[in-house]
Image (cartoon, rainbow, N blue to C red; front, side, top):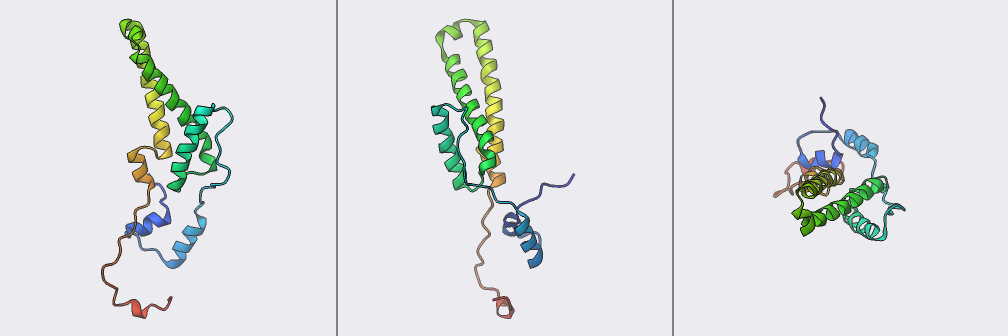
Length: 155
């Protein structure tokens, strides 16, 4: 199975694959940047969820990884995150903890919400491991100038 296609900036930063200038230009032109205009919370979110949506969207836009097409995915994450918080508070209720059946039911609900929240967070780059896959590393700076740069005819 082939590896997932990587952005040209990532390939250049890694420095492991040698591409011609034409190949780099072709790859750069074929990559689609995210559409960042019109990112807004969907109507089905309540006011608290919309506020959370805007906060997370702002962070993702700062990382340059969120586009307009990601709005519904982020909205689903915000909804599930709120459900997780409700399930967590339910499990802390002394009345629920006193009844074994209610405790098991609340624990299962919390577990389902956690799994959904974690999956959505991973898709959006909100976990450490998923963000490491998304962030393009910076190319290391050359410490000393290349002695062959004077023969370069492009500059």
